[in-house]
Length: 227
Image (cartoon, rainbow, N blue to C red; front, side, top):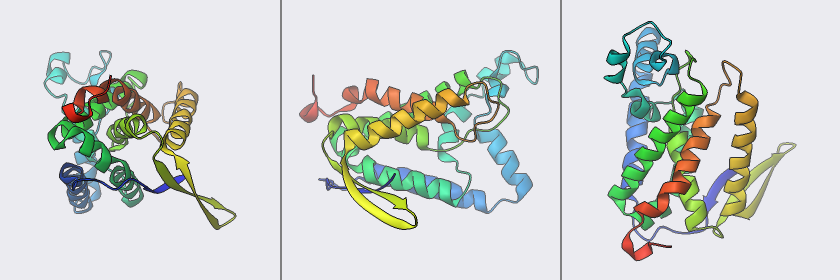
């Protein structure tokens, strides 16, 4: 199921959501300007490689690693290709504007970053010896989706399901669509345990989503605070 749009218009222009999107696109364009060697070094430096931070790694002193934790933050602004960034930014366009409206721009930015870091930590813990760089905004976006699901549970999400090359469009309440998405992440994450490479950082999605559920209330403006 691919989300096409939601049915709730933003009350204010979501400036921070668009600044996040523009930042991701700008960094991706920079990635495209690099040759293969430069890109590999760039991803290796700013992507999250769990094995680099493992206590059992002998590549660097642990004290030095503590001084270079930036990949837990920077990895959420890197993408592996056009499809990766287009899908992530499209989902952020759909769900981010309404969440920003409820939180305010700067609280929304803080919420987004914290969910992204929580996603990175989750991926690290479940893949502690992996030498494969984890990159992408989907962990942070998962936190935004969690907030949207609780703030707008009955908002309709128009989704697309292709059946034998025939596009089928229909509406689902957000709690159904996002709930199904999260169950799929849990299932895929459970299946990925024990494998060195699952291709997709499912546990980053799960960690970002759970952090969004836990934290979203603390970032709402007073006008929208709920008990």
